[in-house]
Length: 71
Image 1: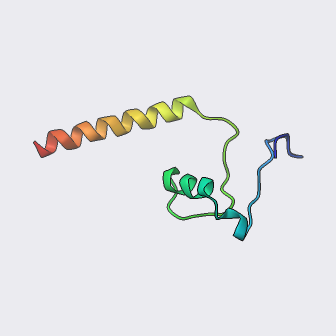
Image 2: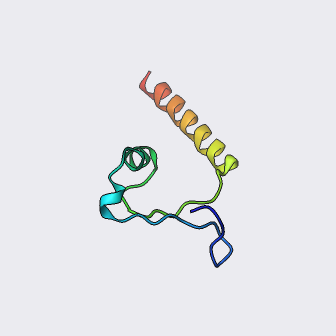
C-alpha cells in the first residue's frame, strides 16, 4: 500500500468487487469529479495545490457570474 512501485511511482491499492462496497469508497465516488464509478481510479501521490486553487477560483467566479446574470 505505502511505498514505491517498480516504476518509481507510488504504489496504488487495487480493489475488487465486494471489497469496494464501503462508506469510504462511496463518499469518494460522491465527491470525486468522475462521470462514472471505477473500481481502481488513478490518483496522483499528492494534492496539487495550484490546480485545486484554480478550480476553486473558477467555481467562485462562475457562481458570481450566474448570480449576476440571474439578477
